[in-house]
Amino acid sequence: MLDTVFVVADAPARPYELGEAAVLPDNPTAGAVVFQPLTTTKDVGRECVAYSGRMNDDGADLPYSFVPGRPADGEVRFARPLLKPDGALADLIEPKLYMGARVLERSKEQLMAAWQQVLDICAGHGLAQGVHATPPAISPTALPSGARHESPPESATRRGC
Image 1 (cartoon, rainbow, N blue to C red):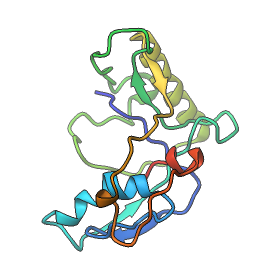
Image 2 (cartoon, rainbow, N blue to C red):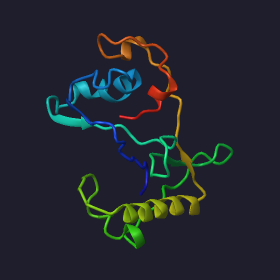
Image 3 (cartoon, rainbow, N blue to C red):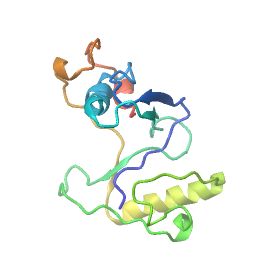
Image 4 (cartoon, helix red, strand yellow):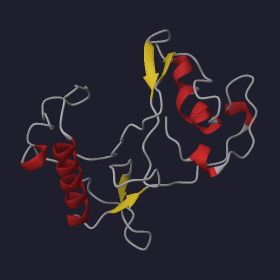
């Protein structure tokens, strides 16, 4: 089931260890919503990597990150689209790999065909592409220690982690 399309941007990845709260110091929303809750996980100290997502307004006609969703005037609930290993997605989707990752080398043409197939599947379900959401206000107690909360510019709030 397709829940989120996350396309990694060209920005450098940021290594960190679980338990760190200020992984993305320029993004207090990510610190409060993503990294602060991970400071109490049983896996504190495990090495991880944070990536920035490619956004729809990053230029060029390249794939970008989005969340499938209903248009604002429609029903809120919807079934997530099912992606099957056929067509351009045939060797990219592994139904038995539920929560893992793998690295596959693909040509730009193969990737663009897979991207178009994902867009077509979403459109076939009547879904829109959610590319921006305004984050909720963050209470000062939710911020990583030492962080100040100011309203970040839109470019900072829309950058995922």
